[in-house]
Length: 205
Image (tube, rainbow, N blue to C red):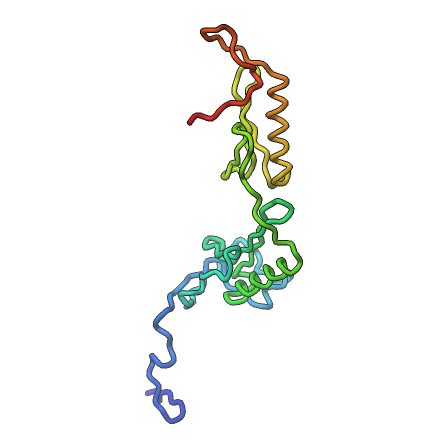
């Protein structure tokens, strides 16, 4: 059976007229694609850990972020919102498997706008310390302090996620001060005994 050609306003449409071939690509979603029904927690896919592979066509600009604090996570297949609040870095995901392709991005934008309107988005805390023995550890997301104890160098890290950014810095300062006033390090040199053990370790240039 031969199919009749598609027509619009009396004009015969070609395939390129109604199928977009430029600026698009194929994407396989590993964890499935949700919708408004699935966005309700009671209607989530069960069990949630199973793969639900589905291939769709996406615009090439789909992964363009509307804001630097809204980012696409390729592994988890979700849009994630990042913001600083109470001196801590927070994040909230909006997965495609729950909200769908379009609405996962829209919900992330909506949530971030609500954060800004409620005054919950704060500036990123400064990572500059006034003591050479105290430095910010980007990988551990905390303040690391180096000091001497019983003749040996020690290092302690206080995470910003647990103590808060400034409180973690204060605790590192307390350790540095306590080590200087409590412990003594004996070090033989040409002049005799060396410096106090409690003095902080100086990083190598």
